[in-house]
Length: 419
Image (cartoon, rainbow, N blue to C red):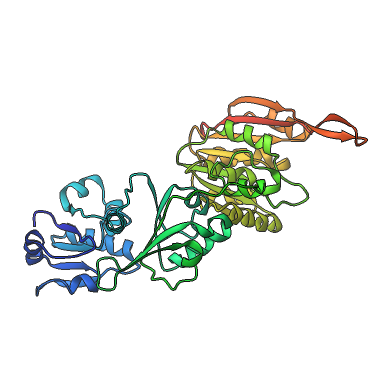
C-alpha cells in the first residue's frame, strides 16, 4: 500500500483482486457500505460505513492519513463520478492529493446500463438527483439522451412525474429504468415516462431518457417557449407577474446580451420583480443566479415562474437588497432592476461585495433614477444606452400605428473594488 489513502472503485460487480487484497492486508480502517464489506475475505481492519455525513468522514480520513494510518475506501460504481473520491479530493490540497491518495477507476452504473442495452452514450447528457433541492427539468427534457442518477428525494418515478408535468408532450417519451445493477435483484425495463411515474422505484436507480421526436401538429406557442431550452426574450405571457410588472421581452434580450454571461460563475438579480431577467440568465448559462426581492407576493410569483420554466440554478432571497447582498456569494455579473431611490447605496454595496471587475448593469425608467445613476462616481461607468421600442396597435379597428413604450435607460459599471 504505497499511499495512505487507497480508494477502490468497485464497478457494479465487485470481486476483490490481488492488488486490493494486498491493500486490505495493510489497512487500519475500511470505509464503504455493508454490502461491499460482505464481499471481502476475513481481515483485521476496522469497518466504517459511509453515511450521509460523507464530507465529515472525508475530513476524518484525511486527518487519519496525515497521522500515519492506512485507509481503504470502497466505492460502488466509479468513485470519481458523484462518488466519495470526489468529496475527498475537494478537501485535499494539491500536495495531499499527490502524496496521500491513490484511486483505482472503474465503470459507472450508467456505463454498465448502456452496455447492457447496447446504447452508445457519447451524445448523452448526465444529471444527478442525489443532492440538489430541485432538478433541471428544462435541460433534461431538451436533452437528446439524458442519464439521470436518481436519489431518495427524487426517485425515478418522481422525476418522471415532474417531467410529465413540465412537458406534457413527454408523457409518451420512452425511457429505460434500471435499479440494483449487478445484483441478483437487478431490474431493467423500458417504458414511457407516464408509466414510470406510476411505478414504485428504488432510490439508487438510473433513468435513461431515449431520443424523443415529437409528432408535428398545431402547437401552443407559450407551451413551446416554456419547454424550449433557449431562454432568451420569452414572451411576457410565459411569466406570472404583478400588474404587468416585468422587464419586457425585447428589453430583456438587450440586457442579457450586455451582461456578457459566462459559462459558470455567479449572477445577482437585485430587485427581481417577476424574476424574468434572472430566470432567463439561469436558463442561458451554467451560472448560479441569486435573486433578491423584498415583496413577499412577488417572491411567490418568482417561485411559480421558476417551477414553470424547470430551472434549478436560481436561488431567491426574500428581503431588502441592502441587507441581503453581503450574504450572497461574490458576483461576476449583476443586474439591478428595482432599487428606486436606494440605487446608489445598492451600487456601493455591490462595489464592496462583488468580485473585482464584475459587470454591473442597472436599468432606469424614471428620470429621477436616471439622474442618480448619471451622477454616480464611485465606480467607472462603461456606458449608458437608451432603448426605445414601439409596438403595433390597431386604431378604429381599421388602421395600424406604432405606439411607443416608455424608454429604458441601461447603465453599465465595472467594479474596481474598494480603494
